[in-house]
Length: 366
Image (cartoon, rainbow, N blue to C red):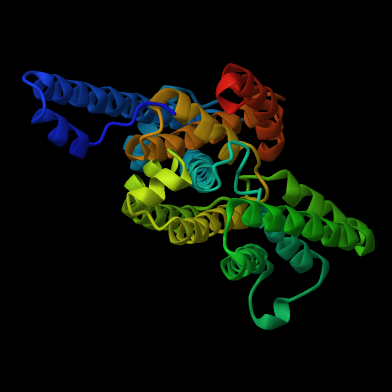
């Protein structure tokens, strides 16, 4: 486990040696300053990626045009304003907020399950969202009084949340151990995938095409209203996660060590899984399945920032946002004039990136 320095440690050590206190205090300040600087660098990289994403697309708009359009929208002609403010900006911002949600969710899940391969898809939440979307595509539920535009994400959200609550209920009644949660999640994922396969078998050609497209993941349906919803949920969950920063950091030392300093491991795990489910369900409800962000983002943050969750959690959110933003750029640039589903790009980039990360940290994982 990487270095973890707590202020309490410094207070204790400062009284035990003649010069140990000042030295440890200086080391702690250097530790905090270095990681704060790294977070600022990641935030700046995210801003540059956002501007690059907004300036990328079939319409020939340069970076200066984008700067000017964002700073002075009243000076734009109608078509350019629509391209920047109604199409590209929601698309780019949705990549940021969804990537941040998946990065934060993946980081918390890997910690509470103590499993470097854990991600929001491990517990079948993604498969449940796909099932909800598929049911809405195959059967007409507009008699409920909602348009298809809202029924699709609403159904995905309801099923993803329902799957999470089912796992939490079963796990709580059977002990909520790591193995119990993971096994329930894997079993649920395979079961839900089988039901989605059955729906694809009975669907007509038009519905089948929509289901397949949804499973590829796409930012094309982004709007500022949807971005605001996902961002609001992310902010709430990010603030909520600060309650468990020290408990999660302690969990990285092992469950027994965490219990010895008063951490209620089972309760922390259940609360964190509920938060992960909310983040994942809201993110996937509007864009479909986007894999590997919640898996790779936390590994990058861990390599850069270490295990102290005061820095690791925001770093994972930033890493996830950067990864999905860069994937968004690649989805528009790989084939001229065509925007690829971003879920395909994340899979193409995520697999070799994840393998390289595993090889780089192989000894630690073994």
